Length: 568
Picture 1 (cartoon, rainbow, N blue to C red):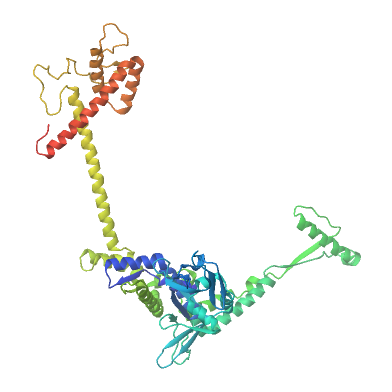
Picture 2 (cartoon, rainbow, N blue to C red):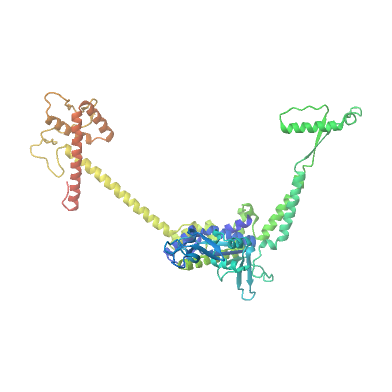
């Protein structure tokens, strides 16, 4: 856990440099979504801390096909029924005109754009190294495991369809080692002193502190023995002694009977803890041991662990998950300087990933690094950067990078929000204008005027309805379908009521209802329908007619204003 916390302490955001915005966006999406770069760096760091070595390579995705040598029909190997014989693929052609049987040709094609690229972490136990002590050149070999060879030789379809052909050829030749090409393996290692010949290998720090680690394990082993023998007390039951020789139960009772009675009592108690027991003699129980807490070397273990972690370059507070605030700045600075080589290896690994990705995807080769921890975690430094950015002495990207903010993405989001706000505001203004225009049209219609017209001569003040009808009264309808203002509702079959009277009354009511809100209008229409269903139908038709006229008048006014013809 201490080693993992050291590794993850330095895993900050990957910074990309020397590239255009489009290239940076492609690489950022590739690192975060395709590779999951933080998981890869964490695994690489854990291997380096545990083994002193990390061997990683790119697994280039490919898809294997089988081709008929006669008609050249080609199909994916997963869709072909074949047999594996003499290190060759044998099948039958599905072409009705061919029907070839025999050896098929193997065709491998890269599928970088379709299948994901992944990083392979090789086991150090399976890697062999050929190292030149003067030039420092290293050749890497893979000792192919026996079970892997067995799967290939027996023709396991999963291994045959997903294993690179170079490895299959190495198994065919029964080679003990498979050699990697130059620059295929990225090797992270823990360097040692020049006087220690490691032949290209890294040696973990735990090997240099093996004595302390062995001492801690000795203390833990004895601590385990103490826990087994001295933590739980050893209970002993004996007959209670009497006050004199004549009353001593040991001299007068059968001890076999005593033992049987006591053990039977304990067996019964374990079956039923609520049971009641009786003995014909008194007993005494003593607890032996239970001094394990005093014997356990906890202080020695803690002291040895702190010494071991300090020798490893790990603060004990980091292992326990706490840091003393009074000494934090100096302690963190020393801790970061102690592990600069780990950060350097991470940055080299990142640039190696960029190089390989650019070669496989034909992208621009970028440079990158992990953001320094002091920038990511130093609150005082963040405040200074914000002040310098406000004074236009540094860029906003430099000031906001420690917060994990990409200024390019934020600008795009701000512009999108502004565009969305303008669109919504335009929709709101358009809705308000339509409502206002419709209301004005209703009011003019109620006064017997069309938009853009002057009152006709002879029309009484306040306007009137065509045909001599008076303007609609204000307000709503009284209960029972009676309009407020004294207007009488003609009843169905009433004597002296002509169709012209119904039309006039319906027009007045239509204008009056259109000025009401929805709930009031609905209630008044229901009351009118109960009292006079014929008038209700005419009112509904008049309301639809008025709405259509208002819509056409509103359109004409808008067109008139756009063409410079003025308005109302």
